[in-house]
Length: 375
Image (cartoon, rainbow, N blue to C red; front, side):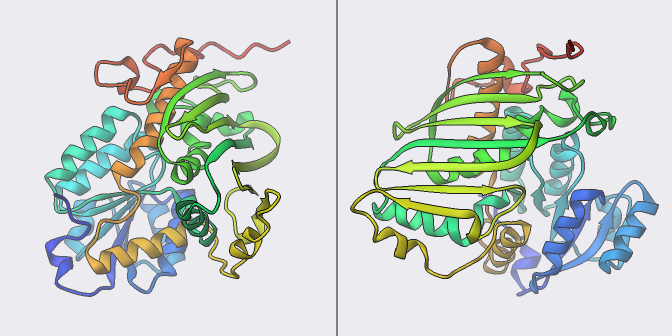
């Protein structure tokens, strides 16, 4: 069994020393979130580009720069490694950290395929470190309240849902060498953009059972899809539509959850607070408005997730979101690809190690590799 903290860390209350691997754009969100946690201390910036690492370290007051985890460890103790590199390097770097008995936080997606998730789980079983996956939309006062109301039965059964990630990325975005490639990003907006929203949907509504999907490349020159659309059935019987797009000029992220007794709606772009939610009670259930409006306002974001990670480090418990907790989200992404490429409904659990979509999200079929057609 794995532990969130190493034996060395277990003997002290903190602060816990954090190294960030990869000092590009997303690393700044992590650094800001970590800097806001009194139980965490940024001690190293790791990057193969020493100039970029130096600039990042100076910006965030980080005392050491290094070209590798091993070099960072030579400079002092590290308890937690945060991986902020392009997706194809997430798993090998996480494996390296686990081999060093370090705890790991991995940006989304945590891996490129289901095969890689299982390989990480096997490595985690042999390490005193463990892996936490960044799905920061799970962490907010609204999500906590919604979960409490659902578990109490106040909302009734889940019935109908909508989960849309409608974003816009121009062609220049995809002209960056590592973007839009199956073997580097693992997929298009289904893997790299919408995954945060449908992860939140699964977190709120529980296990999914089957999915039927379409995906296309409509507007961008890229090897992957630029839009996907799916109908997902849950074990509860509820149905939801899930759209993931990077070709939508009016950008928005939307979740709508119709329960028997109320509709909960969330609209935001890259993060949300209480003002982004709306509850509409069914007739006769107006009392739910008072239960919903309790005054607490913890917005979603990396900071909210790192607060829980810091607390877990301190208590010696497994930090969310574990590989096991992230697996259903990764399975849904794989199933959306398998359904859209194969033209049939995919059941949860169907993509096993004998399935071509287990090892790569496109099943190694390169369905959209041809140039996008224009009129």
